[in-house]
Image (cartoon, rainbow, N blue to C red; front, side):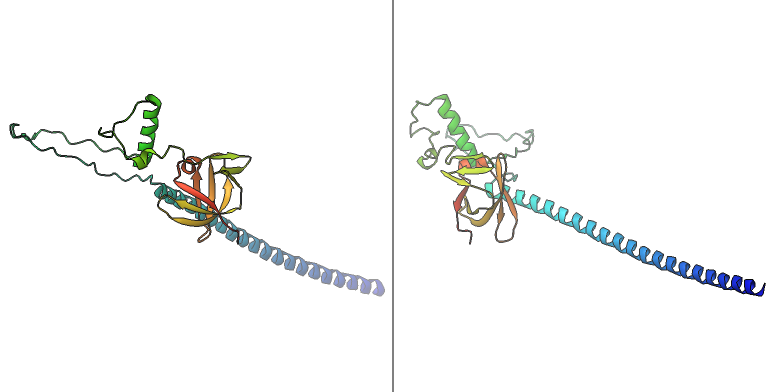
Length: 230
């Protein structure tokens, strides 16, 4: 009996020690897994915040590039004052009486095209209506020779198989070019992508992107020149 009682107490003590050891091990694993979960949560939160900020910055750059493109092409939305001419009054004509009940002039229209583009479209329409009709230099509708000589499409530009054909040369993605605007501004940039009706270029100075349409290249609003990649 004494021997069995001693074995019972020994086994009971060993079981208590094992229980205590297992409990401590479980608590350590719980604390470790909890810290890892908190750290993973914080990392995910920081990563999500950085992705959102990067996405907003990219949208902001795209909006600024579109605004810059509109300014370079002259497609501004500013209302220009209308120039009016006052004719000289003849001696026998009565003095005009100002109309006090005149209604205020309606709001002016905002044109999306520049004056040069409007004049080019008008010249094209006039040529289609009467191609063989001579224009007398003495008529008020006569335009200067510097404007009538420039056609509506000055350069050949098209996109095929993800490449741009412009001025008898092919341009592809990641090609280094010079972009010249009508105000003689020369920008060093790289073609970042070629779409269906436009191309995107990235300026080498600040890595901002610009969108150039085929119509702008055809009319000569922008001119592309090749440059060395170095």
